[in-house]
Image (cartoon, rainbow, N blue to C red; front, side, top):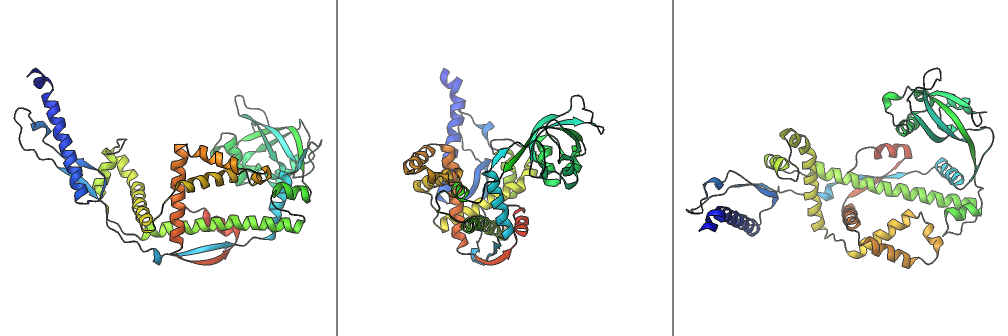
Length: 401
C-alpha cells in the first residue's frame, strides 16, 4: 500500500503512455500510413488519470501525411555544354607547370613582372607613416598581381626598399579580395594605405620543355616531345571540363525535379514540428524563417528516395573501398604510379578508411547520389552545346544543389 501510494500514480501514467505509443505505432504500420517525423501529441487527459479510479482515456495526435506526387523524369530537357579548349588555355597550363617545376633564384633587383617579392605589409597613413597599433603582416606575391600602374613602382627595387600603396588602387578585384582576407580586413577597408618593405626578391627559372618536365608531370606516360606533352595537357583540360559539364547536367536535373514536381505539404504541422519536435526548440519567427529551406530539403528527400527505389540504387562495401582508393590516388596527383607496386598499399588504406564511421557515412551519401544522377541521366534528353570557358564559368557560378 505504501509503495502504491508513493509510486503508483507515476507507474500507472508511464504504462498508459507506453501502451498508447505502442498502439499508435502499430496502427500506423498496419494501415501503412506514410508520415513525416513523429506524431505530435495534442491536449491529453493526463491530468485526469487516477491510479485509484482507472477509466477509459482518449488521446489525440496530429500527424503530417507525406504528399503523393508524380515524377516525370523523361520530360526533363537538359543542355550538356562542351567547352572548347583553346591554344591559350593549353599554353597557360604549360607555363604553370614550367613554373611549378622550376628553380627559385634570388636576383639582386626586381626586373620583370614574374619576380616574386617577400614583403612586410605595415599599415600607414597617406604619407607613409606607420600607424600605431596598425596591422603588420608578411606576405609573398608576384609583381604581376599588382595593377599595371603600381607594377612599375616595383621594377628596379631590391631588398630593404619600400613602396607605399593604397589597397584599392594597387590590386584588381580578384587579387584585392585575397589580400584583404589575408590581412584580416573587409571591403570597407579597401582604401587603407600600407607601406611594403621588400625582404627578399625571387625569380622562378621555369623548367625547360624537355623530358624531365614531361616525366615529372606524367610519370606513367612515355612522353618524349613537346607536341605529345601539349596533347596530354589538352586531354586533361577536356576531362576536367567534361566532368564539370556532367555535374552541370546533374544540377539542371535537380532543379527540374524540384521546380516541376508538385507536392502538397502539411505546412502547419511541419512548422509546429520544426518549432517543437526537433532536437533544438525554435521560436515562431525562427521556424517561419527556416521553413522554406526545410521544405525544399524534405521535397528532395522524398524525390530522391522514390528515385533510388525506382532505379534500385545500392551502395555495397566494394563501392566504398573503390571510392577510398580513388580519393587517395587523386590526393597523390597521379604520383602513385611512380611508387611501383602499390596495390597492397591502396588495399591497406581502403581497409583503414572503412573503419572510419564518418568516412563511410559521407562516402555512402556521395556514392549513392552519383549513382542516382548517373541513372537518371540515362533517361534525360541532353542536347550538346559548344561554349567558351568564360561563359561556362558564369553558368557554374549560379547556385548548385
